Amino acid sequence: MSVKGVRLSGKAILEKDFKTGMRGYNQEEVDEFLDIIIQDYDILQQEINRLQQEIDKLKKNNNHEQTTRVRAPQQPTQVNYDILKRLSNLEKAVFGKKFVDSAEN
Image (cartoon, rainbow, N blue to C red; front, side, top):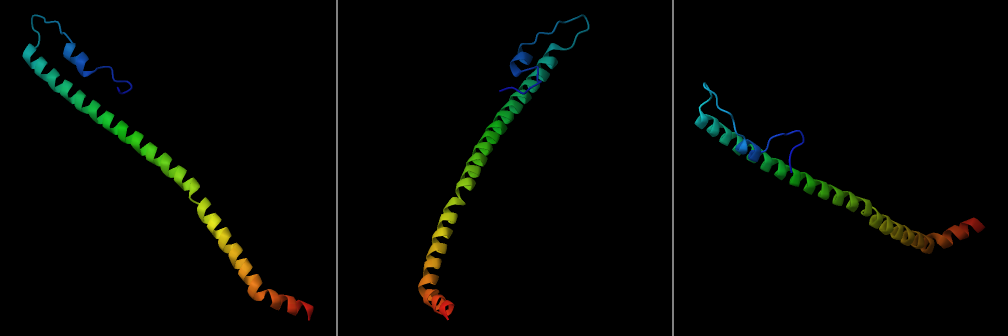
């Protein structure tokens, strides 16, 4: 994976051939400097790849958590409904006759 807008790669830097002139640069110094740049590019590319993998992993975990949250309230709702139904039946059994008796009087 490469970064958008980056025009050079480590390989392109390594393969770059400079023309020499009468008063040109010291070829060994240029080569040493380019070696450092290549190493830095490689380190940065590895870090970019690592961070992209971490982003992908976090997105996957986030999607999984959102899916879990959507399903989670359904179970307690069903449990609450069952509890309310049982409570209603219990109230009818305990207070049902009293309410019927008081309504008749």
